[in-house]
Amino acid sequence: SAITNHLPTAELQALDAAHHMHPFTTGNELAERGARVITRAEGVYLTDSEGNEILDGMAGLWCVNIGYGRHELADVAARQMRELPYYNTFFMTTHAPVIALAKEIASLAPSHLNQVFFAGSGSEANDTNIRMVRTYWAMKGKPSKSIIISRKNAYHGSSVGSGSLGGMTPMHEQGGLPIPDIHHIDQPYWWAEGGDATPEDFGLARAQDLEKAILAMGEDRVAAFIAEPIQGAGGVIIPPATYWPEIQRICDKYEILLIADEVICGFGRTGNWFGSETVGIKPDIMTIAKGLSSGYQPIGGSIVSDEVADVINSGEFNHGYTYSGHPVASAVALENLRILQEENVLGHVRDVAMPALHEVWHGLNDHPLVGETTIVGMMGSLALTPDKDSRAKFAMDAGTAGYMTRERCFANNLIMRHVYDRMVISPPLVITPEEITTLGKRARQALDEAY
Ligand code: PLP
Image 1 (cartoon, rainbow, N blue to C red):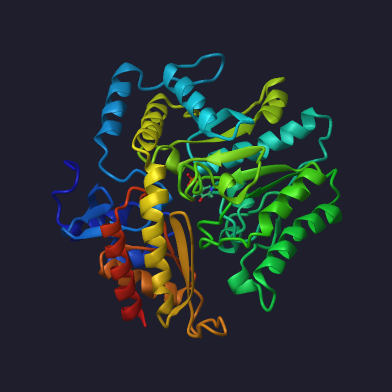
Image 2 (cartoon, rainbow, N blue to C red):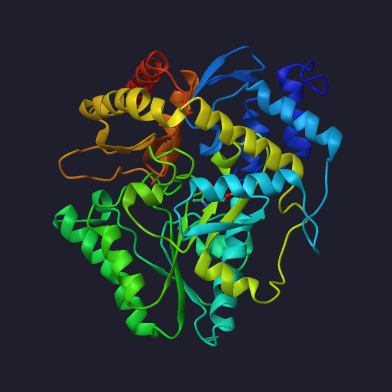
């Protein structure tokens, strides 16, 4: 851009380290090595300040579902900025872009979810959910139903509320998380935690942990259960098939609201519009963000069931963000949804990209460093291990092998992320079979070099 791209890379990196505090980054490493400077992007490829073309196997942060460089979204944003760059949706005002977007989301969502509360991000939307479910029960005359059950190693965002919902220990160790009345149960991560149990038995047992927690705390105390249909940031943990039906049964039995955090799974990532369809659940609330706008504008929200919305709407919900239903973000998200539908991106995923990616991904299973490969739709992961058969851990610190592999991916112009010693992949949904072949070759090369 005209702002800084003309500066030499080293100068940009020094300025960056001097003045810019990065999320989830060690400051010393930033100062020593400098961040990779991304200058532009097209399709599934990023270009950095050194001219490298990097295949983005993560679609940014699991969000650029339609790929980079779609000028239609830029045109819509520019038009909307000229016409109405900002107005809020507080205090009895509204505008056309947010109305159209809410209607469109309701038409794509399961038929019992028809109202959207907008936010600027997934974290904000999950903060909304905490307050909404507690308010719902209070308005129904059951204020003691305030505990929200979540899972260890879940990711629901980084704000105080959503970070508390999440089950990431390193996050809980900083800044006083979790807030009160959030309870975490174990995750359905069979490969690492299943021991000798079959995946089916293990999935059932981990779901029944929810029932045990509800009975221990009292069903009159529990407001909701929140989970990602498939854990993303925790390492693409795909639960055994027995898990979700049992969770649904338990939520129904004890009148616990079910919140599906669809921030990653939503808008095609799992091969359906929502991950809830893929795993066969009927949530009361769905959290959305990321793929809603393919990351072209920051926007998130909660899609709310008629039952919950009717109760909340019968009073005043004292909650909202300056950017709830931002007109430019809404217009861009709407255009993104138009492209997803008119270009049949889900059809491309199901018929072309998914089969090709699954073949390439499972093809990595023969590598000596790879313990398992697992994938659903367009999100996959592999476990790094020094010994496949025993599912052993490395002698070095957890995450070191993953970090080394990620660095070798970088060196081979592929972006893959690591979660401790799991490598994860989540490319733009529009990726072609040829690009998937390139992804597979670069991933194998990186594994060879990391070994
Ligand atoms: N929920 C899930 C499942 C996520 O993966 C994320 C982000 O990765 C969030 C919530 C938080 O979203 P945001 O970073 O937009 O606040």
